[in-house]
Image (cartoon, rainbow, N blue to C red; front, side):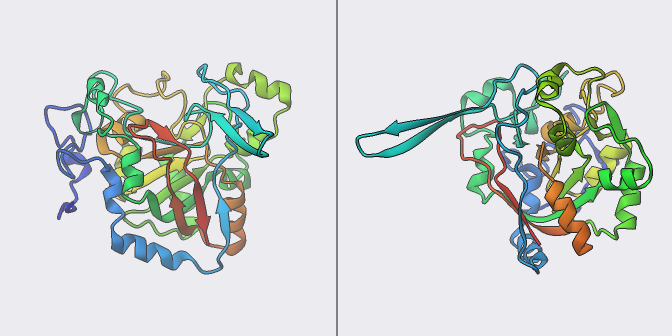
Length: 323
């Protein structure tokens, strides 16, 4: 797969003029399965390995049983140990909804709402073929491995006296993001994997058991996340990220289809269905943020290999940051 010689401008989108707004269909070929993960070339990954200096390893996965009461009526995580006393030995069985805890959203997860088309113009009927846009295609090519960068919005907001409410609808503006990047002297490179910390997991962990049970029906609802605007989309596109993620259950301001978002300006639609840009949600970024601040650097080597489910929609990331 050859990368395009000239990266299209944001104003050149959509590339497929017969398709929905913002699409980059065909950029990596009509039959492409990797989208922006194509930017993780051997040279990009080799350069990312130079981020390993102290050898500090940090898991970025939230426990699979958190949140203990998932939203959108998704099934609660189940784990059962199967004991074989005659041996003796144990097996175990796990049941999970891949959207219930830390996850990478694959390209089967979200379509353009009005066009009802997924990445590269695929339709729901195409997914009868397990080899079309399954998340296992990422793992087959080596997963999401490269240079990660952290934008610690939660730390910046608290330090600047902002009333941080990760469990309520609110916008992280692109101007704030650029301010943090400048203050922390963060260099953004093509092929980087972006992480935005808004403080969700810390806020959720602080809830009492009864509050966690009430979390799906909390009032006011919504989630703190990146504002869904043309400026946000332009910045994401021009930055050429290989993947983007957050500790919030909704990378962008939630709910995704809230009245504050224009129906044609949805990060989920443009990223997943339009560009083939993986979206990660509910990552545990607390130890990562603490370590980055103590070391004074916000870039690191990232390794993340989703589970190899043929035709899978989403997956736990199995993600580790290495400084």
